[in-house]
Image 1: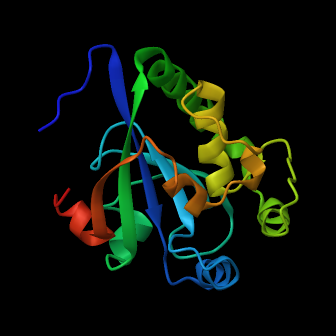
Image 2: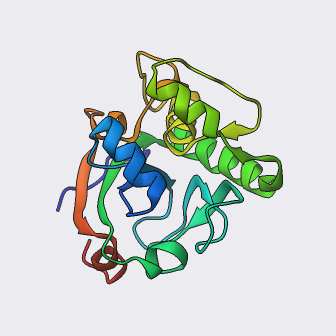
Length: 185
């Protein structure tokens, strides 16, 4: 097993595609294998952060959430295809992400899903709205602000499949989210 360089940490990017109407719509128009992106700092069994439905049984309200592969929406739909990637970052980048996620999550009631931004992204038009994000915009923005990646375009134009194309990603699990929850990673 490859060891991590001293002074570096790992962050995790989870990409999924559910069978919800919204996910199917995104998949239909983008033809992307994955339609949802989340960012985690604790590994496969830990919390992932994203913008999505707050209640696993209802589409709305939606906003900044904490999700786990063994609970909530994913536990209700264990056959969702997923890919979990690891990204090695500096200790400073990791600490920035920890602080930023902690601050945002502590104020999660301020944050809302950027439905209009999702639509604009499809037309390749960035629509940045204060306290509104869609999942891949959120992940892309945090990675960019932390200095972990350069996108070459605005985070509001990043789709889940763009995240898969990052050169430094290391795939660590591909399959169903339920097998990831079962410790298959």
